[in-house]
Image 1 (cartoon, helix red, strand yellow):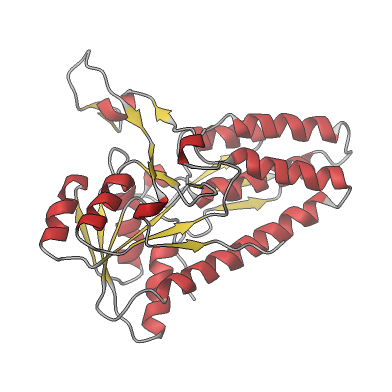
Image 2 (cartoon, rainbow, N blue to C red):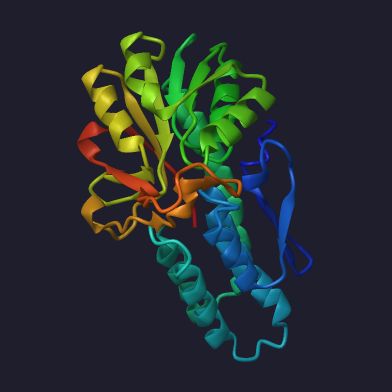
Length: 313
């Protein structure tokens, strides 16, 4: 089954990590190169990759370090240093959960490179299975609203639907201010041959009122133990509207972290300039302030169903 480049946007060749630069899409399909962990972490900070790309990159960072440190000198200290650098990149995605997993494998004495490679294989298989499970929630002629981008899962879900003779279509929010919806999700759905309509973030209530969509499906960057999720800013208000209009609200989510509830999830606040300018061009008067929380918390009671990512170990 053909997958979007966003489904697995990171690769390790020799000692260099190649990362699909999502900030250049849809104009150019280009890859950034990282030759060390500091460069790779900067890619995460700059949001050149996000969602599952960040997760994959974390494990490739450790694999790269193993390749570059063949003498295995001071390996434990190096791994701890790398983990700290990764954990400091963006606060809302639970990087520490991932880095602790790697450090745990290293401490156990198991061959770390094999543990990481096996985990990545299982992650890829689990993502395909997650898309297949999600496709069971849709019927022929369903129209789905989605927000932001779920790294290649939406076109894969649509393909699974087609295999069952179910043709679905999509409405995609622009997802401001980075426009991941119109730049990434709309692009990969169109490339996959699926019908997609872009709307601005503030059109959702009207679109639901006009009965143009009948289901909502979004991703999640963080799942708390009680079912609350953190996802791209704007998700919470869509969930509230879905509840008001009695529209099912589904979430493609990662494994739960140690956070007990959404109130335990730290919300990343991005720099002011990301709202005040776009592609280096000012879009607001000089001297005004901006506030940009990159995520919001959607409580469990607004979620119809969680579609979990189940990764074998």
